[in-house]
Length: 499
Image (cartoon, rainbow, N blue to C red; front, side):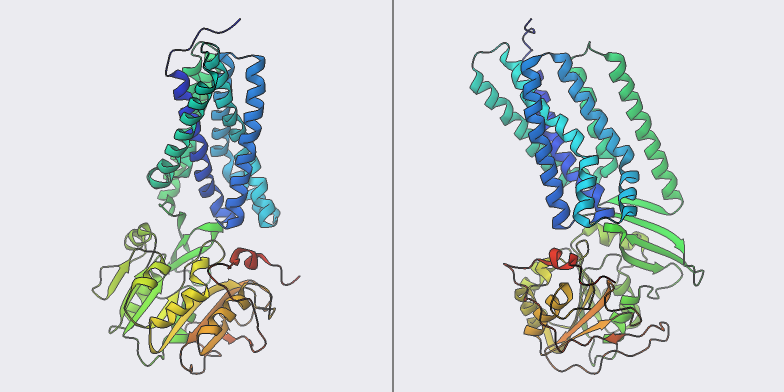
């Protein structure tokens, strides 16, 4: 028997909210995956592809189900199940991703497995909603084409609204876990809009469960914060601030971690001493520069190195380019950064800043990362050429890179070295820890200058007994990275060794 015609507005609301939920879930998904898998093009490709495939499956399945039994109670069940799946993602995300991390899967396979488990079920169910809503609308209206088109337009409008809301506001205001619980609550509540009298007890119980899970999550978050563990979302990334004790010295430390649990900044809480070996290397290769009147650092995270330079070199003006304003706020609040007239911060993309500025620098430090590699636009020949124009005579560029240095022609390190070597008269590559095999992924320092550099490397810092060792690059010939061809993620994932 056909169902009574729905009051105008109910099905449109369902189409709009479910469309918004899809895109909020997808954008939030990138933050859920980032601490374990990063945000490389591989992760984004997998996330988009799996969710699109899930939606397609849902469209097909929802359409078939709607033709067989177009009733509001079934639509309510679909919405409630979608909410339950979003709640499952909120509850199970940590366990699932830690399990995949322990399995040591190749990045693309790990991203596929994580996305299928955490985001595909809810996406399939959300894909079922619009064709089901359209079929219910057609029970009482004869203008089929106009009504179906209108409902899909409303659903797409919801997706647009969800995209902007998540990217511009929700992630920075609420954080990823709270957003997942919010999606779950909204979808279960929407199921009551679809059919208030069907399976009220079960759906009410689901709401109570989600409420209790969200409360437990908030309690755990507060307990972790009191113990020195903060989980924060900014407009650009998800970060963790962790307090601990350095095992070797017993000194109190604070870490700033982000994608794939990489430590972006690490400081001692009892002094401004540098803790990270690669920052010691930054200092060691530039401390004897004849002039350090003005330096630029692109990518500062917790501002550990700018803070150190301001203290160590009272004559130096330090300019910092940090794309994420929240990082500067966190540096002041948690990492000991204080106001200083010799520190200027520019919240901008590094490429944009270098293109626009007319300032010249004695040293430019590059320490910006996007997952495992610097952003590709900070590695291309076009950008490197502009970097050279921003240097004073005899100036230097120092780049932090995480890669292996075993092969002369394949992989990320040879490509970056060759690109810089095309522009700069003197380009050298150093192992931050010279005791490591070249095949290991490790911190490497690229040092480049438009004039001849003094001897660099094989020096020891009084507080650092690890040798800074030059890599023999005389036979290196990697691809030249350019704006129209810079496959840095692929190069970074190349297996150059079986070590």
